[in-house]
Length: 232
Image (cartoon, rainbow, N blue to C red; front, side, top):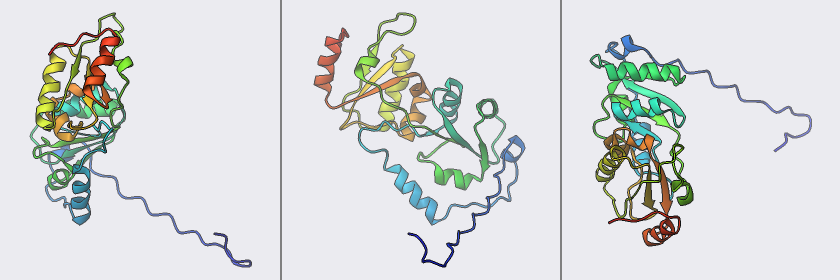
């Protein structure tokens, strides 16, 4: 609201910028005296995030595990806000490659204490690396059924009633290896692309397109009308 006549509105001073976090391989493997900032606010944030995305949203905004983060950066399919790496990790070609790809994509890499990374993680074993990215966007069944640019007909997986995230992640990993290019997920009674799914899938979700449907029987009928045969 406007200030009373004769009085000048005062602006709040802008907050001072926070210091930049440690980055680089040397700090990732050293600096054991860094303190952890894993207070009550982070514990609350972790509980809030672990509830997963709302119904109808795919998820995939937090990617954990070295292979999954490596594929996220290598495929370059969606934007990545930042990558968190734990300090004091043993040398690893995968970690080095993650840093190289992040530098190429201009993605900030933060080296943080192990306790802080574990507080941010939604899985029990994030393997010392967590990436925060734009969630995956679902596509329509019509888009899912389009041939690939080289003319290959669609090869789809309908994952009906899979509520366990590890089972869904393992299924997506196997499907992608078998040549599946698209996945149909029901809106209800199905796991979403949580951090557990992305880690178990080991990067497979970056090579797959997803459609979310209201019901599997109606989706199978629509796929049949679009010329896709169903087996199983």
